[in-house]
Structures are given as C-alpha cells and as structure tokens.
Length: 364
Ligand SMILES: NC(=O)c1ccc[n+]([C@@H]2O[C@H](COP(=O)([O-])OP(=O)(O)OC[C@H]3O[C@@H](n4cnc5c(N)ncnc54)[C@H](O)[C@@H]3O)[C@@H](O)[C@H]2O)c1
Image 1 (cartoon, rainbow, N blue to C red):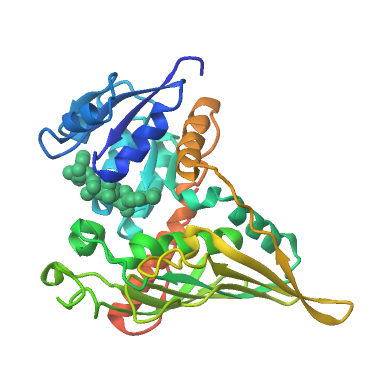
Image 2: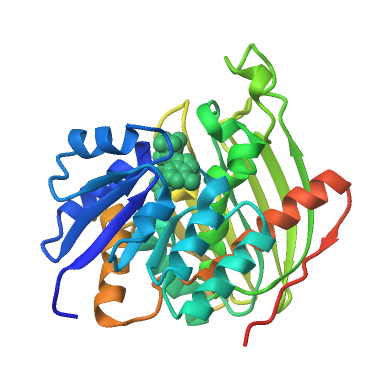
C-alpha cells in the first residue's frame, strides 16, 4: 500500500492518548478521526493532543462511515466487542485494547467478524514486545526445559486498586483478572505456544475493594480484587495462576516453568514500588535456569536485557505494518480468544464454586 494509512480512534479516554502519541510518531499514518460517546470529549481530545488532521465524532458508527484502513479501540472493556464487530463489518482493520472482550461468546463473535471480513483483529498486549519475554519464550520453546508440565504465574500489588469503570462489572466485566491478570496469562500462554485450555478451577474474592478502609468507592466496587486458578491445558500442562490488586503480602511469588530437563524462575523486578506491582507484565528482575550440568543440579543466570524500547509504540507500529504489508494480525484475535476463554472459565468456576470445562468453537 503506497498511500498513508488512515486511522481512527474509538474511545478518547486516558489510554487513547498513548495510541494517538504512537500514531503521531509515524510519518506514514494519518490519524483522521476520533470518536467518543461523551459529547465534546473527542473534540477536546483532538485539541489537547494537537491532532490537527483529525475530526471528532460522537458515535463509533459515524466514524466507521469514513474511508479508514484501521481503528484503535480504546473504550472500556464492555464496548470492545460491539465496536470491534462493527468496525470489522465496515471493512476496517482492528487493534482492540486488552482484555479482548468481557465474555468468551463476545470474543467468538469478534473472531467470526474478522474471518468474514478478512480484516485484522489484533489485541493490545504490549508486554509481548519486551525483549526479555521474547528470550523467555525462546528458552521455553527451545526444548532446554524438556517437556514443560507446570507453570506458575500472576502477580500481586500490595495496594493497586484502580477506580472509575475498572471496579464495575457492567463496564469492565471483571477486576484484577481483566485489568492485569490477562497480561500474565498472555505471557505464560504465549511462551507455551498458546495451548488450548481444557478446564479451570478458580476462586475470586473482593475483600479489599468492598471495604471502605481500602477503597474510597467501596460501595460501587463489584468486581474481584483477587483471583486464583488451576488451569489444565491440552498437552498435559497445568498453570497455577494468582493475581491481586491488593493484599497484605509483598509478592505472590515468581513465575515458574517446570520441565523434565530444566526449570525457569522469573522474579519480578525488585523495588518497583511497595504500593505497586510485582507482576511479570512490568518486566522481569531476574531470570534463572535450573538444570543439571554433568549430573549436577546447577543454576544459571540468564542476563536480563535492559532496553529503552517503547513497547507500547511497538504494538501500535506492528498493527500499522501488518495493514501496510497485508500481513496477518501480529497478536491474532483467534489466539487471544483462548485467553478470554480462561478468564471466562475463572469467573464461571469462581461463581459456581467448582471446576468448569472450557468449550471452544472450531473455525473453518
Ligand atoms: N494496554 C495498556 O497498557 C492499557 C492501559 C490502560 C488501559 N487499557 C485498556 O484501554 C481501555 C480504555 O481504558 P481507559 O483507561 O482509557 O478508559 P477511559 O474510561 O479513560 O476511556 C474510555 C473512553 O471510551 C469512551 N467510550 C465508551 N464507550 C464508547 C463507545 N461505544 N464509543 C466511543 N467511545 C466510548 C468513554 O466515554 C471514555 O472516554 C480499557 O479496555 C483498558 O483495559 C490498556
């Protein structure tokens, strides 16, 4: 494609600013439209961010009438599905923010729309672009660990509960799992080659968010602030997952990959903040390979790469490059549907207080 790529942004809240900043750095992209449901908000966003080429719209439907190549979906989670399906049906490529949707059913419809339209559906998991994650994935997939049978991952914040729509089921679908858990699940599942989830047994609670001592909007808080799950995957591998927005603990432990020939331990970066995260989505502090060398149990440090890569820019750029070069989705919706299936399973299992089976569709 030789002309500039024409992009629209749907939802002009805080995260849209980062999408706009990324597009503005690209001299082969024109950011031509921004839509937000709140009257005047898109116009204000355009003004504030100096988007001189962009026009404001008060509905995504109006924006989708334009001649656009692609859209960034930056609405709250609940609207990812409707806006993505409408955009794909209108023949636009889609980069939707994480989590993909709020239910598995919605994610399935999004993938179906992408297949029908032959347009890209990609999901914004920028931690994938961290060179350290790429190295972890390379090691896991190289066979160095032998057959990987167990993974432990997740992450915890001591105090890190957001507010706004993030604490409402009707806006975000779920809490800590949809907000930060989906990243940890994505990194672990990506390293494993995105195996199909089979069953989930989970527990979720919200003792912190619903307590006025810990959250100023406790009376509005109806999502989980802690979630824990045992997920069985095809290929005889289990994932032990824990995530929390608040807890009386410094960490929920390292990420571990256990294999028949070796193990990998990924410790979160130390001292990020006592109030904030130890989650793997922030990048690892140390990576250690446990293996036998000449019959002796040995530990080898894998150097953590310090980098200045703007991983958010990288994800947006990859979307544009895929559009330009007619390449497949960088992080395909069809794959992230499995991430959504796990989230769906966790919420269902926690609600039913028993293990649930994950039913997946087959696409032609
Ligand atoms: N990848 C990341 O690093 C990252 C970081 C933060 C948030 N996010 C994700 O980005 C999304 C947005 O988060 P945010 O913090 O910007 O939220 P926000 O509430 O600040 O902004 C969302 C905006 O979307 C608008 N909106 C809602 N429904 C709409 C619709 N149907 N059409 C048009 N506009 C609509 C709202 O009016 C609001 O202005 C969430 O899904 C969140 O999970 C991702």
